[in-house]
Amino acid sequence: PFGLLPTRSATHLTGVNGSVLEYQKMIKQVTGKGAILSYYGYGCYCGSKGKGEPKDATDWCCHIHNCCYKKLKESDCHGNTKRYDYAYKNGNIICALGSWCEEQVCACDRNAVFCLEKNLDTYNSRFVRYRDSKCTGSTPECYRGCPSPCQSFNGAFN
Image 1 (cartoon, rainbow, N blue to C red):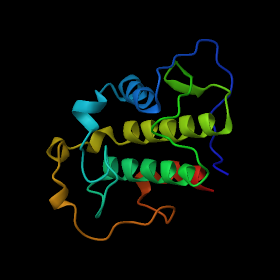
Image 2 (image 1 turned 45 degrees about the vertical axis):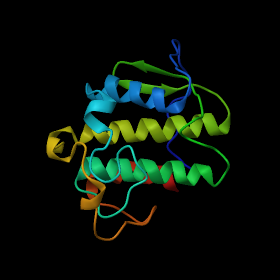
Image 3 (image 1 turned 135 degrees about the vertical axis):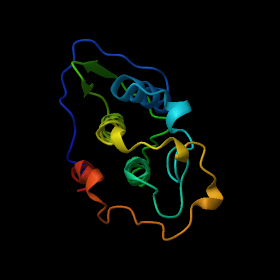
Image 4 (image 1 turned 30 degrees about the vertical axis):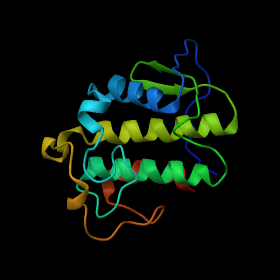
């Protein structure tokens, strides 16, 4: 149902217990930024459930990542706690074979990380540790289209 599963073969697999730690590691490997210092609390959606209008393309990446996890939760697959293995090689993330849930959580994280990388040029430090009280406006529905920066995510929601 999610479409964009990454290539399934890997020679060297890395993994840390808990998807959150794996996601943080992916962010560092692909963007060069530390997940906690650079993205936790960024805008209205990074590191939280979120509300209001996403502030920029990076925030849209996080909103869509949250939607991906929400969709998985409907199938009793919990993205924040599901451990998976992956390899990082030549700038690509390769999710290892595993259960359906493990593969889908890895795909959600992989797609989000490459969305963040694609939008590094618009990353704005004024949105780091952004106050929830500033997150106003309509909260976008999941799976209902988004601005062009997150088009690469569309396949994950078919």
